[in-house]
Image 1 (tube, rainbow over the protein chains, first blue to last red):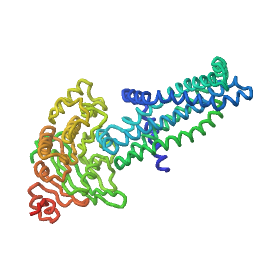
Image 2 (tube, rainbow over the protein chains, first blue to last red; image 1 turned 180 degrees about the vertical axis):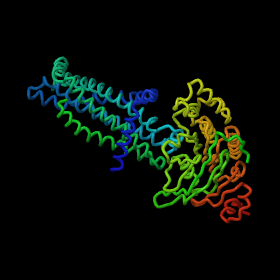
Image 3 (tube, helix red, strand yellow; image 1 turned 180 degrees about the horizontal axis):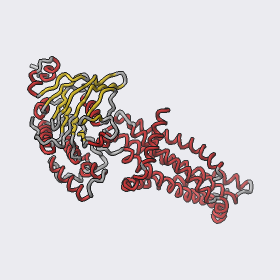
Length: 248
Length: 252
C-alpha cells in the first residue's frame, strides 16, 4: 500500500513537471476532452435532474410543514453546488472515464505498446498521462457547472409540480439567488478539481502497472474505479474541512 | 562478414556478466558477449532461455541485478548515454499502437520528437512502408493487418529512427515460411542499407543460419557458445547438437 502511494505521488509529480508540454499535446487533450464530454454530459444531466428532484421530494414536504417552504430553493441549490454535484460527478467519471483510462493504458502495457514507446524515447507520462489529466481537469468542473444548473432545475420542477410542496418557480429561484453565492460554486469547483486530479492519477497509475493479460486488465479497471471513489470520498471530507476553515 | 565496411553509423555492443532474477528465479546467470559494428548477431535458444529478457536489458527496458552493457564503450547505466545512440526494437508482437493508423505508427518517432514537418513525415512514412512492401497502407489500422504485415510495419517504424542498433525479438514467429523468408531477407537488406548493428533473438534455426554473421546459443540463462554459423554447426556440445538436430519424427 505504501509503495502504491509512493508511486502515485511520483506519477503526480512527474505529470505536474510535464505540464509545460501541454501545448505540444493539445491534439490528444482535445481528443480526451471529446471522449469525456461525449461520454458523460448526457448522463450527468440526467443524474443531476433526478438528484435535484429527489432532494426536493425528500426535504420539501417537511419544510412546507414547518413553514419553511421559501427556503427550499436555497437549500437545494446550496447542497447541490457545494457537495452533491461534485461528488456524484466524480463517482460517475470514476466509473465511466477512470475505468476507460485504466483499460486503455492497461491494454497498452500488456501488449508492449508502452515498451515500444519507451524504446522510441517517448515518455509514457507525457504521451499518455498528461493529456488525460489536463482533459479531465478541464472537463469535470464544466460538467459540475452543468450538473448544478440542471439539478437546480430538477428541484424547481418537483417543487412546482408536487402538490405537497406547491412552490412556484419564481419563489424557488428567488430564494436560490439570495442564498447561493459565487463562493459556494467556487467551493464545489475547488473540490471537483482535486477529485479530477485524483481520478486521473489513480486510473493512469493502475493502467501503467497492469500485468498478466486480459485478467490483469480487468483487475486494474476494478482497482482504478474502487480506489478512485474511495479517494474522492476521503478527499471530500478533508477538503470540506479545509475550505470551511479558509471560509470558502 | 556480409556487412559493408562503412560502419560509421553502427555501434559496438558489449554485454558483461549480466545477471537478472525475477523473484527467486535467476533467468540470466552472468551472460557476456560482444557484438561488433555492423554485425548481424543472432541469439538462439529454446523458449524460456532468457533471450527476450536479455534483449530488453540491451534496449534499457529492464535493469540488470549485476553486470553491465556497454555501447561504444559507454555503460548504458550512465546518465544520458541511451540518448547518445539511435536504437530501435522490433517486438515479437509488433507492439503497434492499436489506436493509431499504420502511417501514424510509422511516423510516431519523428512526429513526437518534432524532427520533421508534417509533409516531410508523410513522405518518410510512405518511403519506409514501400521499403517493407506495404506501400499505400498508411490509413489502415493495425487490426486490419495480418501478423506478417504488423511485423513489417514494426520494421518500418524502426527504420524511421535510422537506428545505429536494431533489435529483433522473434521476427519470424507465427509467420508462414514464405513471409519468414521475406522478413529474413529484409533484415539482411536493412543491414546492408543502413549499416546498423543488428541483434536478432530467435529459435528459428533456418533464419539464424540464413542471416547471422555470428550466432550465440543460450540455454537456461547461460551462453553455451558463440561463433560463426559453421562453427556452431560443427560444435560437439551435446545441448547445442540436441537443439540444432531436434526434428519431428512422424509415426510409422
